[in-house]
Length: 355
Image (cartoon, rainbow, N blue to C red):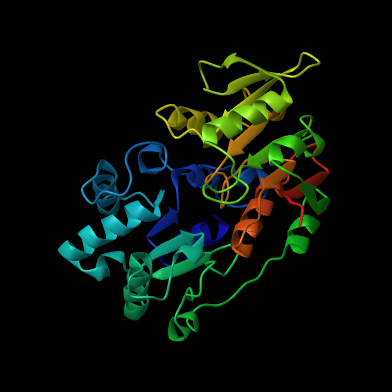
């Protein structure tokens, strides 16, 4: 945000385009008050140009692609969209006006490891066209510079055009006001992982649980059944909040937990995602910390709530099963390392089968 605003203000950039892998990550780039903290300008994204709020993805003639084209014709400066929308919109605009339509624009690509140096990677091919022309500003953002496969993110000649800036977890924690420590641990189970859930899941902590990948040795049934058994280990499922779609699970002590199920990919998931992204604010327009923290107690996910997912209240990331990719682990750890009031410690636990 700060870099984009400086470029818009002082470096001759006319538009800032922020592209994220999935819609849930777009919430990290919503309108944000920066002037209250000493910056000269707020980050403002008009709702019509936040293309991560709703709608279909991955179609060349979708409403979002048309909206992106309208943004490029407008006088507004900031748009947030997914990688898919950016890819299709770029192709449409470049076909009509050439790559020069993106001259003097900042292209900020979040989770940059989705780019690949191979010819088959469309995002990588678009990036090379922009770098070859050398008229756009490109910002690459990622928590891990590795893709999880053997393909490099950038070709050497393209990488040489970037200035690298590394920001470690230690530097991140040093700059925080509240969060001061991070714990990383392993726990082990025999048989099925559900037998050890009670031992590693502290339901007093705000927690993201990632169940095993489908087809892995740790997965023992249908994904919905596994979520149900996690609920049973916590207590009794007593219903669903009609406004948010969060599941309500009562512990033995009577406390009812509000749990967001992101494993269920049915029609109700968009409502759950929207409820998670909606920040609860007070009369002054700023976040109501107590209310926003109480909104949800736990998130259960499979492929979501990893890279770029922003839930500042997360205190514990519990990942079940081995992960072959260090990039994936780094991304999950990052879900717990957000600074928030009354949050002194963050914990990552990997629950795996006994060797």
